[in-house]
Length: 187
Image (cartoon, rainbow, N blue to C red; front, side):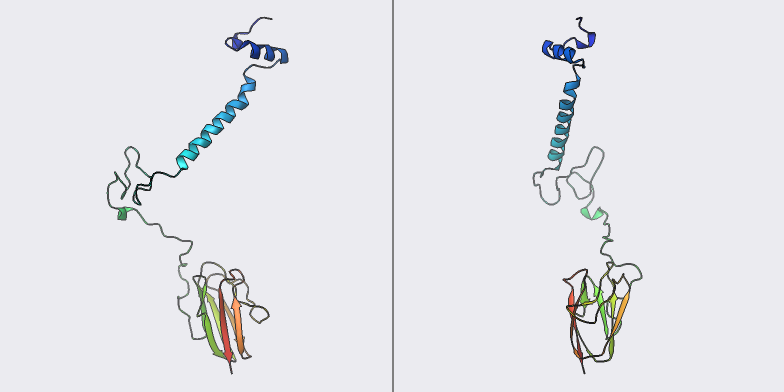
């Protein structure tokens, strides 16, 4: 059998096996080549993401590229205060939200994932109003059996409840159970 031009330089054993199976001699190498390239890519990522040598808090392992400068960094121009500050909008209060303090003596503000005040004392017949000032929804739900069962309160929403019987009413946010508080109702 004559040797094809594209097989010149291929080892005889590989050429003989390929000829007997009717496949191109370079095809068996393709998966190995793809695997090797993937491994090189992964190693590059691991190296790039590895823990850089600690050079102090100012450097953090970042160096400017050619024609670039980073304020406050080694080789950079300008003070660190020149770096623009981007506000954290995930926890920032929405514009036009209710005031941060309770509107009246018989109100409870939900702010910063807490009820304010955490303990409130009112007389029987008093309506207490909860006002959510967080950007996240919250509920007002009695612990165990009890009368408080609000829907999820969106930011700015209110939940009023009139207490008619004396007692201590423990409640929480059912979405965030670590948020707890009490209302004590007197005669």
